[in-house]
Image (cartoon, rainbow, N blue to C red; front, top):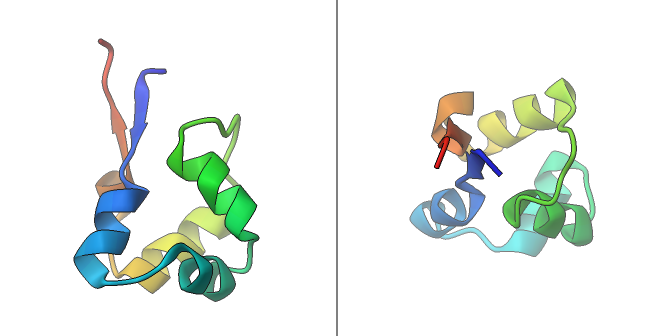
Length: 68
């Protein structure tokens, strides 16, 4: 997939676990795993907003386009 997700790196940088992150953004840990592994077909703007708020980052810090 040409969209690369960097949630793992952001969680590691902030010392946050998947369970705490999932609770903070209001989704299940299973759905965080779907996002982290690049299996998501879509991301709600409200979820992206919550991820950026909790991780104190910009959307571009989480998502990148990689055509290779």
